[in-house]
Image 1 (cartoon, rainbow, N blue to C red):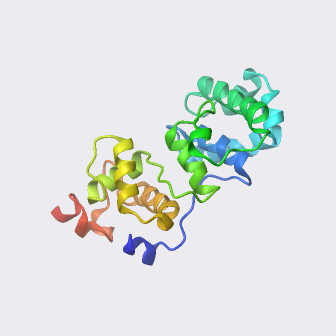
Image 2: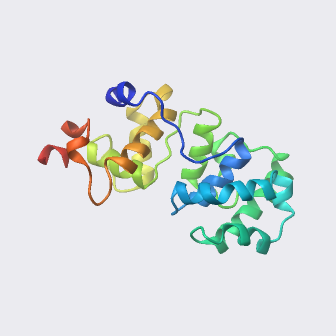
Image 3: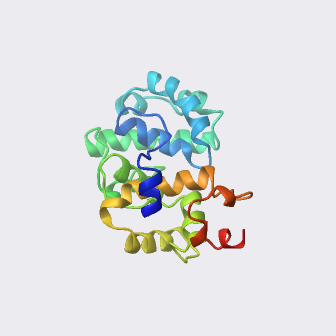
Amino acid sequence: MAWFAANMPVAKSELHYQDPYELIVAVILSAQCTDKRVNMVTPAFYKRFPTPQKLAGASIEEIYALIRSISYPNSKAKHLKGMAEMLVDTFHSTVPSEVEELQRLPGVGRKTANVIASVIYNRPVIAVDTHVFRVANRTGLANATTPLETEKQLTRHIPAHLRPIAHHWLILHGRYVCTARKPKCTECGIKAYCKLGMQV
């Protein structure tokens, strides 16, 4: 973590958003889809549905029309509408801050809930996506076979005050350096700790 703190002092989500509602929309859309593609779609989406109330009142067809270039648009359209309806009906149109409450929302699994809790509310949680899972297990920060066990191990090893930014450090490192198929080990500042890097 010391290397990341020194070399990546500013790290944040690459999704575009202005408030908690916009972020939860973007994170739901980002499942198995690139942030770049999501950022191409969300400006028009936010303009059409600027509030949970507007989204809750929309039809599945209206939502689908705006997100059809995103992966799994049918299921995500249903999730977005259901999420908005629950925000309005159960949470008074406010995105909850607790992971357990967030996971009650349609389309919001543990990873998404941790992203919202961490990014918006600075909760000391770690969201484990494919990048975090890969980097953590390659570098020895974790030794796990599932995202949940990886999350538990990272939570034990990373101090609470660093967890919100550590999530971004690991994502960005996995996205641009420690890639799945052709990791850039010669450019990696933490290769000395990595199973792959030590072979370079």
